[in-house]
Image (tube, rainbow, N blue to C red; front, top):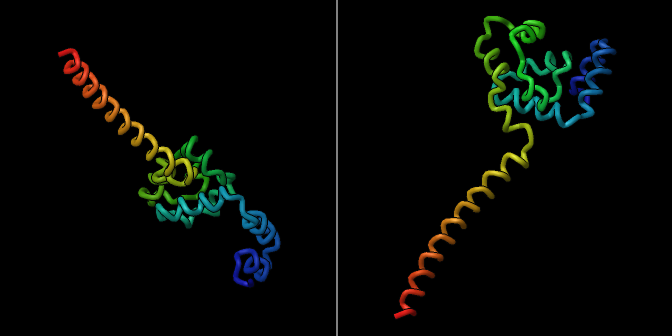
Length: 135
């Protein structure tokens, strides 16, 4: 301990900040995913701004993309056009919404397609056999 953000804040005399940080760090998984997403687009420095403004649910951010106005209110610099664009478009965000769903769905669909192709081939062979029998 001692180097966690809440400990540092308290050591510096920011009691309220320390309290707030403890609430956050007690870890709603949304914050973990939010931070992971921001890291992936090199915008992790805005994590506290987003969380403090109530944008701490990555699902909501994905469903309701941030606007220019919100970015201004969050204090994200206007000259950081790249960062603003990534935050507005939610770049990569779907990868962090739910790890399980994202990986699971793709594989099973392609398997089903494969089995359909096989069944068509079988039916063709079947029709060939029946013709031979009639001879």
